[in-house]
Image 1 (spheres, rainbow, N blue to C red):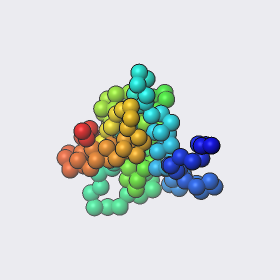
Image 2: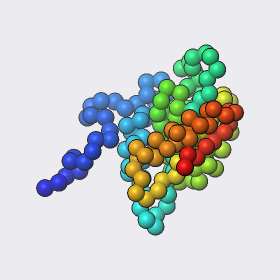
Image 3: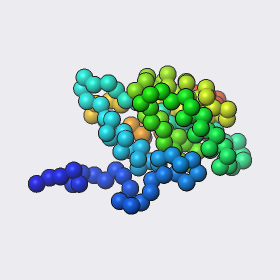
Length: 153
């Protein structure tokens, strides 16, 4: 007999917290779980992912900056959107909006330089692949001017 427990592990082990200690946002494992749960199937609404990355000059990012960014992003979320911290200077938003439109809205809310990578949810594309493509878009966007959003093919 096969159970849900036999599938690949996408979350942290039971009892291990997946909450960022600075922003108190869910972390990467929780993000992968949410993406897996909202994975589109043929004929359903498509969830997309926006990964926002702060563009650092030379100074390290302080806790105050990270909290201010998380507060700004939380303030412009639409109903049904989900925010997580997925890296040292990266935040992710799962959205049902067009990912490029969501990226523009989210980048506009920030007072610090940032860029974004976007990836639409596509039937048959798993959570890790959605996150990977958005991260590649972010890497390309960070090379350009702040405020840029890139959808990696």
